[in-house]
Image (cartoon, rainbow, N blue to C red; front, side, top):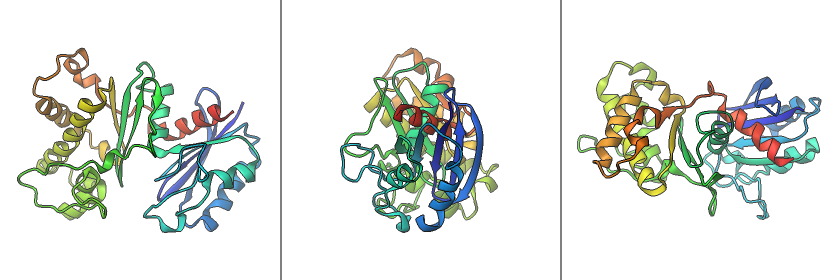
Length: 288
């Protein structure tokens, strides 16, 4: 059985088809422009694939509540051409198949929880750190939505005493996204993250903010696994720094097996950057 999957991002739309085991059979990438420019190309890709259902993992904010009159609509977003656009309804009507939708980061967590690093735990957090910072939470085996969906990237940070940077986020300044996203790194240091690999001070500061956020999440949610993905986390030197600083933040408060094996508690995404598309496949399966 073949399912359609759409990972809708701010710069590109990844369209794919896959099977019930999460195996990706085919995929293409379409630039994200306006809905009028982008949606016909997405529909064209899927229309002759004989998909059983479609799963969408999208940038947000997005209305993820089926009972809402704006379910599946993109809400207030910096991508102004997409504000109010009925992404789910457009594709559901055009393709005439069952369809479901969630955030892009929830899609990545669903992929990891179904086929990846979180498949054996009931409580997990996925954080993506790249162009933006977002997070998804599974609690008691269920994705957490609440009144909208978690926006972990916008938790406020206590700035390092040496850091005078005012933050990149236009809404909150010194939130996690404002201080630790890829654009924040480039804005603070003057060049992109990939050009700063050998600058230890960059990654010490970056790990300070990521670890602070993770410690907050451990205190609030008590997840059994924390998975870090996104372009910034391709800087693998971050992981040992983050793990050490998380333990420093916790300061011995918890005596737990997970934290005594922290290398297997705070881990990189495990599905070769396909976790978002694989999560969208699972969203499609659930839509049926």
